Image (cartoon, rainbow, N blue to C red; front, side):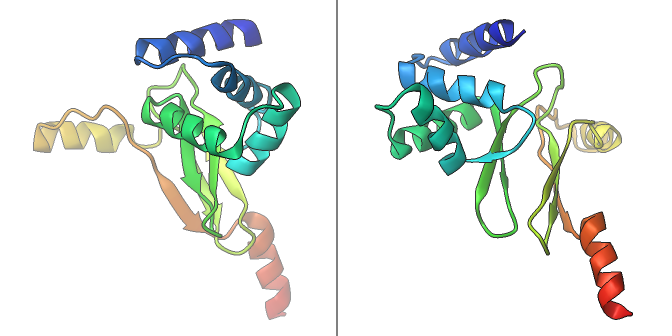
Length: 153
């Protein structure tokens, strides 16, 4: 499965006109292996260094910028201003949505397309073909809400 996913991602990168350098390969492999979580560039760098000691942090940032621009990777800003990255689910037509807790910084990824009705209205009313969207909702996660309730008592 991971090999198939890597081959698919490799094809996406190359179809977009970019070379798949060893550094980019290592970064993609880390994103596949850690696909169950959002990672900062620094975390990706640390995992990638285990595979490719010659990679630099700046290279990881450039690779993530490229992968984000060609919609292979999703980028979300956490409440503390740090960017987090994850692979975009290729079965989905859009990037995942994110819920960001303003208290603890937790980020919850939602892979359901919650904006289907909005897209249809935009296309109908504005004659605008939606090709992608990204939704980030800021608020309080369940744990922080419960903590706030306990603090109020």
